[in-house]
Length: 345
Image (cartoon, rainbow, N blue to C red; front, side, top):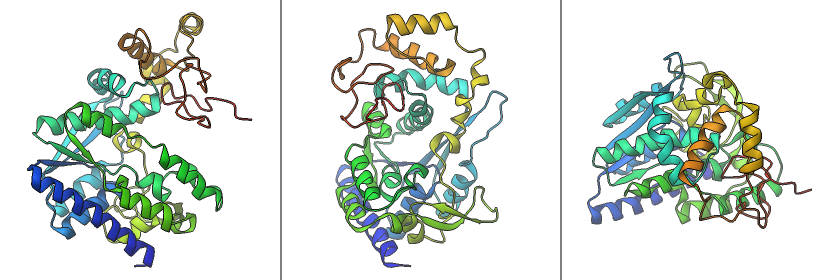
């Protein structure tokens, strides 16, 4: 194990030990939202090494319009839970059931109708609701590792020092849906990767060459590994024999299967052009497709007078919905999902 990987492991364990101190005082029932990816797998392995108890794990798989489960998480999750003796609650739901049951909660809590956000967040929301039903008072996620350690493929381009500067900017403005939803459900939220000590270490002590490079990666459990560029190398190398250590990075919607909601044929015919034009003129919003329209309708019903938390048509605002962006240089709108949301040229 190289120096950066040893340090990564030590920082992760330090973060988790702070979790144990708080839990022992509060007597909390602890749950991990388990995707079977590199980040949550490393947490499970670190907890095992430290002797920290996880009361249970919750995971979700979503079936498409044909009733098939396309997600890539399940085999990794079940193998990991069995190997580590985790009490696993695996939820199976259809995509339309997921939308019907979780969309209203997610739109209200997250104040968004961004399809990419909602396809991911509805899955997490279902897991959080199950955790609460099971009596959990604290939920653990793997949030933050992708941002800090180059997990997202769109971060693999660029060179230093620009790469680290952009990472710093991204991490200074990060927001996690799981955090807001857990709090809304009355549960405590924890991710070891967003703790100040881990964040500070990653930003100060790692650069692009530490985080991103070629490695032997596989998509399915048991498949032959192939050379591929990947991120989060310090975390992968910290637990090189873990079940998910060399798994491909899949976003929540791919791992769970909710990505089927992004397919245009899932929603039937495209929206009526007259409806789209009316919304553009009267509501001053741009609707991209049937999925976007479905989410916007819920948003408009939930916030008939607009979002109280954001100004509209003032300052640096999104060109598609008019809501103020998070920062003057932002190019992505967290409300409607527009990109680029403004022209910075």
